[in-house]
Structures are given as structure tokens and as C-alpha cells.
Image (cartoon, rainbow, N blue to C red; front, side):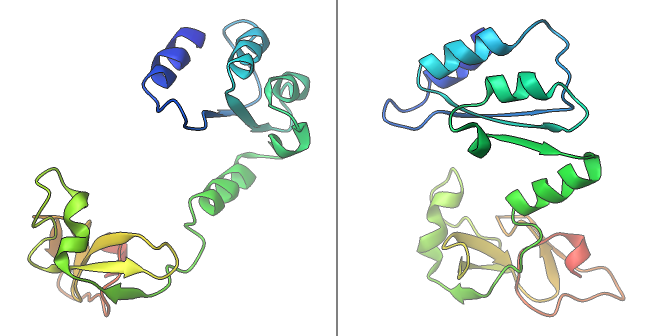
Length: 169
């Protein structure tokens, strides 16, 4: 774990905050991970641990950065973990509205650096996220990038230009 982690972190910006999220069922299966966590913390890596309550709570607590109560989280079961993950990914929040923007605002979303949005998409800025996104128009779903907007299947319809997959139709 240590070698892989340091290899990944080696490519990060020097002034960037280094953070690791350790998500586990609470039982380590490859030896004691605490010395590895301690070495990473000594290098300035901030470690958050998230585990299931029935696991090795002491181990999770020991690996987390200080203050422990802000870096070590325990959940009672996998359903609670899923709810927490959805919250962290903002999947349980309303998406907010989107403001139409010039297509050039979305030019950084693809390798070509221009014309990133699909012909059935437009460049919009999310009022909750502040992010520019290519959003498929009404009646279409997908990622919004070139060739990634698809018409909703017969019998379904997406009433507004919002992000999302087939389930939005």
C-alpha cells in the first residue's frame, strides 16, 4: 500500500494538499496498516478513515489524522455507508438550475479544446456547482459531450435540459 500510494502522490503538485480516503469493511487483510498510515501522515498526507462499526475500530482510529473525531467515521451497516456516499457525491441533493453559457466556456471539457458539446447539447453553468457542463437538451440524455447525447426512448421524454442518464427520460 505504501509504495503504491507514494507513487501516486509523487505526481501531485508540490503545493497541493495530499488526502487519502480509506474506506473499508473494518478488517485489514494484509498485515497491520497502521505503520504505513503513520509514515504517510509524517509526509504530510491527511488520512480520513471510514469503516463499518463491527470492524476493527481501534485500527481505523489509529490510522486517521488528527483531530480523530474529524477524520475517522464509523457507520452501522452498508446501507448507512451507501447513504453517506450518496451524500458525499451530492446525489441526494437537487441539481439546481443551469444558466445558458457560450460554447467556448465548455472548451476545456474535452481533449480537442473546442466544440466539446454534442449537437444536441449546450454549454451551461450549474447554479449549485458553479461548474460548466455540456447538458443534453430536452428529449435527450447522456453526458452531453460530442456524440454522447441520445434521444429518449419511445414513450419517454426528458422535459428539461438537465444532466443525467436514461433514468431522466
